[in-house]
Image (cartoon, rainbow, N blue to C red; front, top):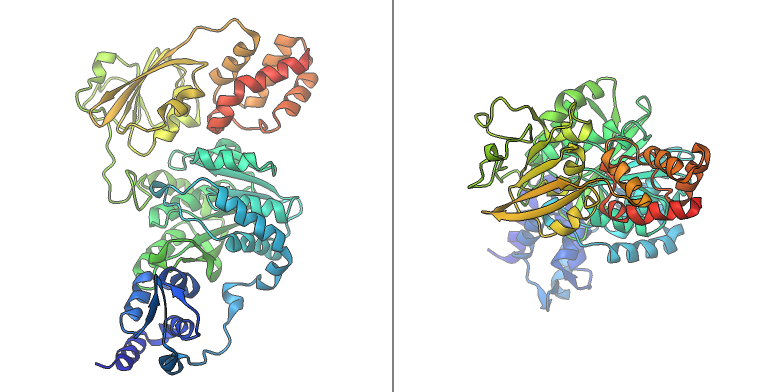
Length: 521
């Protein structure tokens, strides 16, 4: 079959959706050189579809770049008419006024921690992040508004603060590196640690007017992140959730499953901007994702409450918590928790193990203090949830905690650094996993160390409240004086609990407490 006949057949088979392939033909025939990745991103078409087109074309190549020969380009360089760009880019006319911000965002994204494939990270382009901030301002009244970023590897929070500095922005994320990076920029973004599978950070609940999320692109991932975003809204009548989600044009059933998940949460799909989000990567979905504007209804919150605890923890497409991976529970091979004689089992344990010992879920342990303060607690942490380890240790309030890890994290010393004022921590290997023992230390003598210990021993309470009370008692200050000292030295403390503190805040707590003592004398 001649090349042009094969192309005609390919375009015919694509039907009304052939416009994206014709766009690629126009680009290849325009005289410029194109890489495969650039074609995918420019046309928002899956890599497989572009590859199927390229296989039929007589191409010129130089390195990894290609184009149509000039004598062939004319046949395929058909006029496509005007692009209905308002559907995909309603703020295109505004972006040109923010060239300096765009350049700064490019630098910030380039300097950000690299994405983790186990968290399905793919970086959005700086232009995308800028346009998200512009769209928020064009669509909503932002003076005095509160925005919750449910995950923020894309650094949308920084773009919003640069464009709309009067917006109060909070980020909740599981990635400690991202939280530390955002804090380091000094733009006034509030950061909170949270593993959304275990719950939304308490201080982020019911506080936002708008929420935005770019979650893992699985139905359970979308459902979990959007449900947590709904939990974060304070304005239940007028609040909105912005969702980035993309699927290949070849997999409409996957997109339907996601939309069914949103429907199950009783969310009104108020608008969809096709291909609004562009990425450096994600070629399977055309390096693009739609932007949804979702409006909760009165039936959304009952649906969230009924469904959120039943959403699977396997929400990612890769790694130990992917939808294909088994989620190991219980003890590593060769370990017998009965020998430890725990008074409480936390996490998923075999039913037949110690049937008379009380049990609690990890999410429950983090959400509220256990009714008693047991001497010994055994905690089972499945692979992929290791980031919760320091918070689980602080939440137990036990004299001796034994944690059975299904996997051994590479950054275990960093994970446990923030709890060392409370526990003496040791760790040993056990098969593919590890066993960690944390024994509670006696109360320290030094004033600063005792304040730190009091804050961490009250891990479910608000950091600022405990800090002020302890400082007032130790330094002989009034509550008002202690509040002023803490607010000046640690404006980030606010209304969050120790369980929400990012690791860099936990690790820096002794120095920050010492600074408040010095300021009080």
